[in-house]
Length: 191
Image (tube, rainbow, N blue to C red):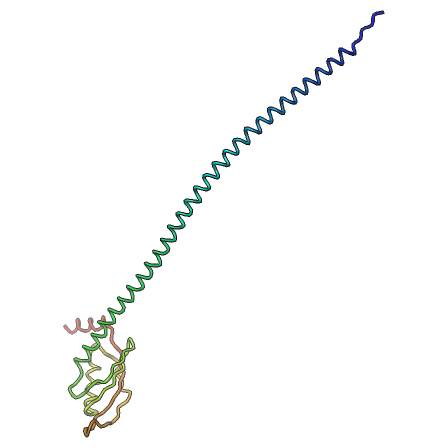
């Protein structure tokens, strides 16, 4: 009888299949490793590009922060200058306001009344002075009341004193100042 030994053939075939599977497995591992390597290289290059972009944006941000700081300083300086200009305008207005007030007083003061002090509190004035008689002080008050520059003239005190051997009256009064626009409109209506 003839005997055929199939075992070594099957064993050989099995070994070939195992080798084939190992080669396929190693090939898949190599392909996967190369794919992962290329993905890593690509992602690393993207990360490097993003880091470069981040650093350039950070540098631009620093430059812009400096410019914003300068702009804020300029805004503060502008606000300070505007505040100072407003103060100067107010002082200029007050200067002419006082000039108009003093001119209005000079127009109505009689010869027999002398002013010793004038206190300006903005809208109102407090005046102290000397007069020859009660009648002279009353004439002064009437003239102030009729003036377009003053209103609400009220006598606070009047006392009898001596200047040398001459009897005089010492007085103090308050009044409110009329706004310049109203004075201009009353002058315009009178013309």
